[in-house]
Image (cartoon, rainbow, N blue to C red):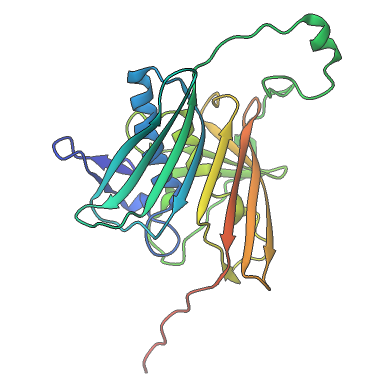
Length: 268
C-alpha cells in the first residue's frame, strides 16, 4: 500500500492511513513529498534538471480526504528552474500546503589539481571514508497519540551514534524522485531531537531541505538538533542529512510550541 494513491481520471490523490501525522491531519513530510514528487516527475519530462532544494509551508493540517494539486512554473529556462506546487482538499478553496522546489541542470566542472590538494575540508561530494550499515543499530518504534497507523509506519527506523536512519517501506507516491524521498525522513528532525518528550507539542509550520547530491541507496540518515524557547512558545529544528556513504544535505524548520492535547475525561 502506498502513502498516496492517484486517481488517473480526476488527477486527485487519496491518502492512506500511512499518511497520518501524530495529531490532526496528515504528516507534513508526507504531503511535501507528494507535491515534490509531482515536480520531479515534470522536471524529468521538461528537462529542468535535478531538484536541489524544497521549501514547504504548512498553512493548516491536510485532512484525510481526496486532495488536488496545482503546479505553477515560477521560472524555467537557463540553468535554474523554480516551480511551486500547492495542495487543497478537493472541493475547498483554502490551500493546506505549498512547496517551492529549485531545480538545476547538472554540469561537470574540472577543478585544478593544485586547488584540490590545497582544499582543507570534507571531501567534495560528502562521501565518508567508510560506508555505514544502519541495520547494525536497534529498531526504533514510536506510536502516535491517536494509536492508529501513521507515516512512521511507512518506514523502517533505526538509531545509533546520534543519527536516526529511515528506510521507506512504502513509497510516498509511485515513482517518487530523490528529493521527494528525503523530505519524509527530514521532517522528523525536530521531533527526534526535542529537548523534552511528552511535554509539549511542537508542530513545524515550514520545512526546508537542501541536497548537494541525491542519496545512494535506500537509507536516509538525519543527525538532528532542536532548540526550544518556551518563554516565546517558539523553537527550531535542524539536521545534517546523510546516506550510507556520507553527507548529502541539510534540513531546517521553525517550531511552534503548544500544549499537548489532553485526553477527554472518562465518565463514570
